[in-house]
Image (cartoon, rainbow, N blue to C red):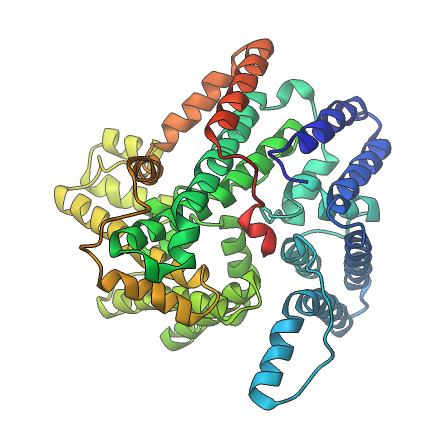
Length: 502
C-alpha cells in the first residue's frame, strides 16, 4: 500500500477519525492502531505479519530479561541473544542469496537454493528492535508493555521506510494524552503536500525522463546526457526518499505523533561529514550511537578513528542491500569522512562539529555584531555572519561535496562496479554528441530542485506557521486542489519508493 494512492487515502480516511474517537479509550486505541498497522503491512504479503510478530515478541522477551537480569553477565547474554536474533533474521532474508552466490563463485561451495522474498521494511524495524534492547540495557528506558512495544514496532507511518524512530522518542508520546486542538494540522498538510510533489512530480518524472536510460545504457548517450543523468539520480533519490518521510511525518502528526526530522537540505552540505548530518539523519544518528561510539568513536587516537569511520560507513552501506556495490559505496563515504578528518588533523584544527550550534555561535560572536549572530541563529545557512573569503570557501565546499556525493550515487545505483565504471567513463568522451535525454524541462527540474536546497529554513517554518492559521475548510479545499495539480503534473502511474528495496 503506497502513500500516494487512492487505496491508502481510503485506508487513512477510516483510520484517522476512528483513531481520534478512541483516544480516551487507551487500550482500545492501541489495539485499533495495531490492527490497522498490521493490515497496512500485510497488504503487500500476509506472510510478513508472522515475521513482524516474531520480531516483536523476541525483542520484548529479551528486553524483560535484560531488565530483570540478576547480574551484568546475564544482562549481556540477553542483549547478545536479541541482537543475534535481529541481525540473523535480517541476514537470512536480505543476504542469503548474496552469501551463497559468493561461496559458490569463489570457493565452489554450493548451498540450497531458496526462493526468499524480502520483507518490505525489514531493515527499519530490525534497527528499531536493536535500539530498543540496547536502550533497555543502557537503562535509557524501561521495558514497555507488550502492547505498547507492538504498536511502536508496527506503527504504519514509519513501518516500511522510516524514519528510524527510537523507543525513547516514540513511547513517551504513546503514553501522553493527545489533544486534537494541539495537532499541527497545517504543518502536516504542508509536509504531505510537499512529499507528494517530491515523489509524484519530481522523482518519478526524472526517473522516466533521463535516469533510467542514462544508467541503463550509458554507452548509447553522450557525456552531457550522462552528466545530467547523474545529477538527475541525485535529485530523484532525494525527492523519492525525503518525499516518503515528509508524508510519513505529516501522517504521524495528524495522528498526534511527532517524528524526528530525517532530511535537512543535504545538497547544501559543505563537507561529507556535514552531508551525513543532513541525509537520512535518523540512520546517521543510529550508526553513530549504536556502532561508531561503541567501537570507540574518536576517543582512541587518529588511526582508530579512521578505522571506526570506515567500519561504520562500510556496514551502513551493507545495510542498504546485498550487493558489493553498496559496501564499496559505504567505504567510499567512509574514506571521504576519514580524509576530511585527516586533513583537519594535519592542519591542527580542533574538532568542532558543524552541527554544534553553540560552538559556532560563540565563534561568530567574537567577530561579528549581535544582529549577525541572531541572523545566523535563525538561519544557519545564511552567509551574513561570514567574511567574503569564508563565503567563497563555503560555496567551494558545497560544490566539491555535491560532486563527491554524486560519484557515490553512481556506485550506489549500479548493479556492478563495471556498470559504475561505464557510467563514469562516459563522462570522459562524447562531449560533442548532441544530447538526446536532456531538454529544458529536465534541466529546469534538476536546477530548481538543487536551488530549493538553499531556501532558508526560517522561511519554510514561517510558511507552515501561516498555513496553520487557515480555516480547516480552506485547508481541505486547498489540499484537494493541490492533489489535482500533483496528479496533473506527475507521470501516469506511481512507482514504488526506491527505499522499499532496502
